[in-house]
Length: 272
Ligand SMILES: [Zn+2]
Image (cartoon, rainbow, N blue to C red; front, side, top):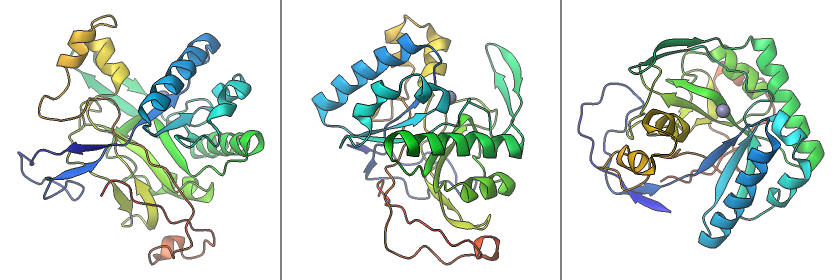
């Protein structure tokens, strides 16, 4: 699915902003699947399968381990399904980084991130679960809540994720107030300056759908639609995701921070 990308209307202010946003790109769809409530998850799974099979549009699920454990059979049809890719969202929805939201409606709210040991355990448990249950080698992760600037300032977390086999992340999903929306000119990038040139970040654009729906009212569908950026030719739902594939191509040249690591996966760029 492609979307028209409007020209940038503001100055380039940092290295992750695209300098020439125009033409078309690839619209990536992903879902965080994280609920403890079995009825909620199963209703979602039934509906999402209908929609994606009817439209032929691919998507990625980012699953919490706790959700997999209580929906093992319900998720099985998605494992190996040509339209679906299964990745992870940590085991128990532990934040990778702290978030301090400046929400104009609800004020300032702080959510504490996990420790490095917690993060490692959360990621490892979910990776092992996906592998044991469905034979999937997990390489992708959405950071719970997502963060301003993703993980560009947290080489220590990147190190943990890399060691646990993660090769692409969706962690930039908030603006400078740890709120939303995220502007469309924040485009995918590699964590090369941090020493991980083969680790890809795919930011989430616009609003996280649940945040916008809560803001305008859960039953206010028109408000939800009106809340989209009218200059975009795509809905505000998470513009994201990425279907990872192992490749035989060599990873980009490594910097000293990851030179000693043997495993390396390339990743197919699908947005160009
Ligand atoms: Zn989540």
